[in-house]
Length: 522
Image (cartoon, rainbow, N blue to C red; front, side, top):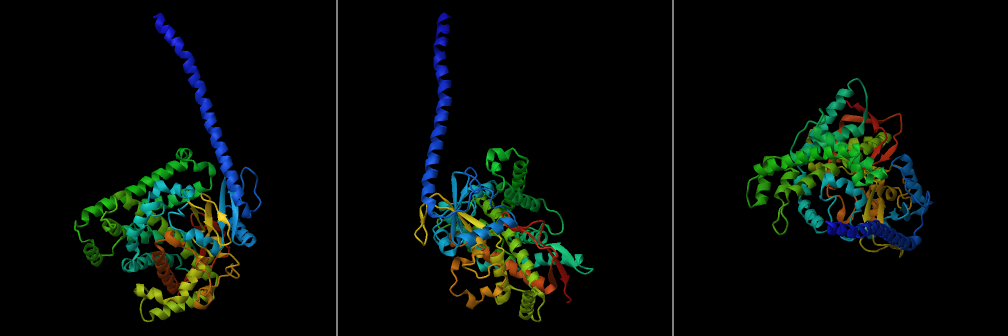
């Protein structure tokens, strides 16, 4: 027993030393980390001295908080563009530099770099990962390249053509609501509310062949998608919620996880049901053709039957990620683009009437419901009006890249490897050195003569380069169908109050984008 006591006493100094060593080691590691971060930040700041920057708020916050998700924030971006013209440096806190780019020539070496050299910045996109998984929006490297090759056929015009009928049906449902609301004259409507439900309705039918009737009655799945979009936008604005551990214990974090489960369960159920109904055949092309004859081929069908060059198919997890990504990326952006083009045409009745006459001339003796895929290429002025609206009010106002190597700009300046590049789509579209009178809505900017000599990256509502939006033809087709039918049936009038723009995940309007609609006599 005395020996045991002595051995215990003999351990005490070692235990005490260990408990003393651990906090010292932790403090040393923390100090070393701070010193390394400080030196790296200093070295990077020295390399970035060639880039001008606006005045900081203070040394600790840097420029953080100067650009808000509001009308004033967009006006501040316009002032940055007028001041710096092409590029400026921006500090998020004392350590994190961001290079903001506003000019096509300076955007080019970043956006047109290979996907491995200029991957997406993960800081913001990581908020979406629990919802969207490792789909096209989130994935990188070989996985992204493989999925991009496999998904490209899903957006071939042969697949998209039959979707025109879905676009028409969903638009008709929305218009029936408008007719009812405007039965006694004109109706004042929040375009975002109505058009978002319409585009979600279309997407559910195109992606899943599922009709939730969400334009006429509540849908849990649709409500979950709308809530997830709002929660991600809100989290982005609150710096302390960027830490996952903290966010998970908040009320918003719990709502986010609940909505994710609902969306994932819906998608998983559709995938499992579709796997049971798809024939087990080796000739996938024949299967696709047979299904296409029987009904509109949906996105899930194409994903289930897609194989890479080695004959490997997508896993259920991959299919869910791509389907959820398409539902997220396809409804909000299209709804924003369509809402703002209606706003711009309401403010310019002469352009609205010219679009209307163009559609009437195209259809002549046909009914509006008879508009087809081939008709969409025969609407040049309507297309110009859509493009000018996408320039003035781009649904996505900015995109980010974090380059894996130094990027040399046209004037010889270098963006150091690892520095976030914030490509301002809004700033580029409003740059007076690229677009004369950039705040004026002028569709004729996009006629053949005016477009000559303009840099290809002056207009990038769907991004550009290897990671551009794979669904841009889908989105533009839906916008053309919905806009053509709307102008045939309604006169769109401006509201008494000018909207205040609000850039969140997409460009919205504070309190909604309100316009008046008046049914036209048949």
